[in-house]
Image (tube, rainbow, N blue to C red; front, top):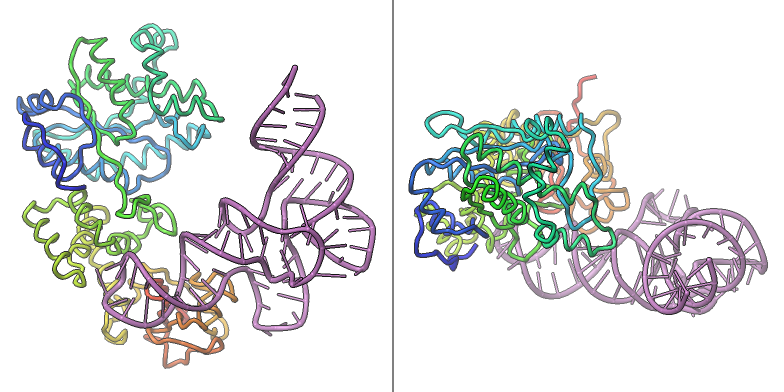
Length: 433
RNA sequence: GGCAGGUUGCCCGAGUGGCCAAAGGGAGCUGACUGUAAAUCAGCCGCGCAAGCUACGGGAGUUCGAAUCUCUCACCUGCCA
């Protein structure tokens, strides 16, 4: 994340750029990798295991790094782990609960379509999607043990950081998860044989699994292959990146609405925004430096956050969704009178923030806060009102029994309910019967 | 298998019969300041408008009264085998 990342003497413009962005955590022999990249288009791969129905913004780091490498003139192989997703890589949090084959198959399809969005499938460096179930499923246990297993030494396998840690934990480690590194090594070998793949990129926690592949290729084929890892992105305060109070920030718009997604990036703290732009933005280096300067000189303008939020939201959800989300944010947080916003924009904005239909008798503020989920209970709602944190249509309400009058309803039916500065929701009181 | 200790609110952790809806810290929420940031300061932080209700691993007791005592079940930790 800092500018201090050392750049080895023998390097390559692409690697240099990745270093500047803080995107290289570890790599195998870098001068050799630089030479390979200079020699011509290289086939490289990055894998994604279907452990949920959607990827999240942590995965975006790898995905966008792959895109950068592709833009530099190399051929990406986007691997979806139909096989490895059935096994699960060892984690410190303990043995995984296996997901059913049908579930994994469905997730594979969903994740594949997400991966496809970030790579270019046309032109001389066209990307390709591969699924490791294709070569793993047909393999017999005998072939696996004779052809692949012989190349793996127990000492080496046991010394892998996560394996050793799990082995010495109370939880232990199943043979299933222990074997994961072999499967991933096999993938690299297979892609090397099929497509001449010589580079694997992955998250830094995957380092051991990536080197399983480079070692296997060396033993089985006598060839050199490379591994490159991206760092774990952290927040300025050291806490986990990509989580909000409501959980993981997903790429799937149904799991994390485009509005929430945009807001996540908009709210990035000043200390982190410069680093995030380097990782997630495709703007030129000069533009990024100008934005860093803007944050330093005019922090209140939040130019860097605006740029980051707009760009990443566009990348993930498209221009139309981003425009609507930006209009939404403007309407709900802007200084302007809510009455100046047109009906369609307001409704879209509230839908993004969370629009709740209510019928029946006119609700009180307490009921509005509860119905929108802004308060978890009536007690919580009353407390919020007493603290001066309840707003209807951007006006503070101090009376818990206050009922919005018909004139308060925007366009005869909508209310903007806000708790504190940031938590906003909409209520539609004009639901057709 | 035996012995000892432990299980408290989102998390950590105090509390050994009434003054306990439960100290303290963290997290979280709200306000002030500001920039939908950070820091700081202040208030809040089980449910309920309220009366009150539900809570201290589960269950059963003792007592006018239990987080606190007894029995029992479950789980965790340490020592011994």
